[in-house]
Image 1 (tube, one colour):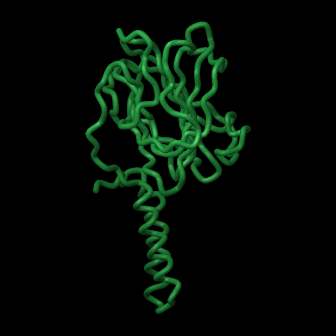
Image 2: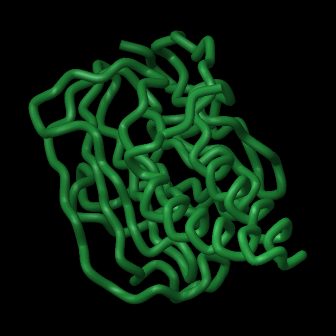
Image 3: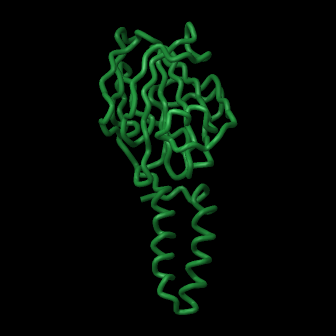
Length: 212
């Protein structure tokens, strides 16, 4: 399984150095530190997937548990500035790679500074975050990566103007948090509900009412 070492190195190297020092001095805590170092590496695993390709579907952008499905959410990147928001919470054990929910062109990317409240709290909506506008043949999709208490860094791998395929990797939130997918109000039939587990690029979140 591939590890995203470019992102993982900032965590693995310091932990590995502590581990080496403890083991070199014969301390038993070195084995605990070794386990922590291994966990850091696993947090940044990047498994290959046969992602979904149905243009009538909007796929999950993150692995985790759906915590909310909300209508009439105000967002200035949405047509009429209102959208439907599906929120996924990422636990530490989840794969942290974010994938595009649809095929389309990345038209806008914005990094928004903010706090680092726990991702399950309502005030996490004002946390540091990065949002992406992806214009597909059936309409616009906005993906928002939200940092949390531990996940204080967000990586982005796609620039405005690039075309992405459904399920393509676009970035990751370090050490878990939450990911929102926004769709134009009334444009889709939602296929998930709070409490369901989803996998990025594989689980359909919604189906367009009129596929282009």
